[in-house]
Length: 230
View (spheres, helix red, strand yellow):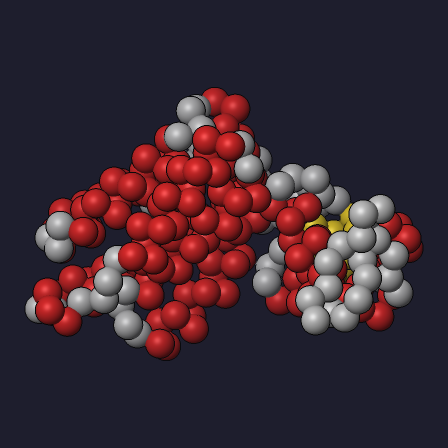
């Protein structure tokens, strides 16, 4: 049985934790809940129509994903990333993606993984850009990068990479919203299609060059948290 949100916005049926995670993650990634915003349990339980126990478990899981922060004696807030956090996370992401592309394209063509999933993610991003669905665009963006690293066929690499990407989701979603104000909504999908096409050629050097241009430096300067007191 799959639970669905009720028409009035309350959550009902079986997995209240899963639904609360999905609802809160969506509100964080679409900007309904802003970085640094306090998450008050009483308000959320009333709005979602659930008890404190599943909500607290949902907040715990979102904390593991790097989307919320639990502050001692100060409650929970939407995560804020410092300039150092961003630099370290993107540097590590770049290194892991370069390694993944080298693994994927260094072997003989006959042994390479199909690119269907990577292409599907690009097409989902393009569709979301055309329809203006910010949450769908963020989901497709995450799917693209998971598919990219998955091409390496390296299970331990994926276990390291996936939680890293989750931590970056908050920043990337915030940046994509800001990017939409200053650039065409299609710039991001075009950037990902170029990377897909470079990988599809099977030319390792060309793919690495495109990946180098694709990374964090293409993003707009973020409004970062400079408060280190927490």
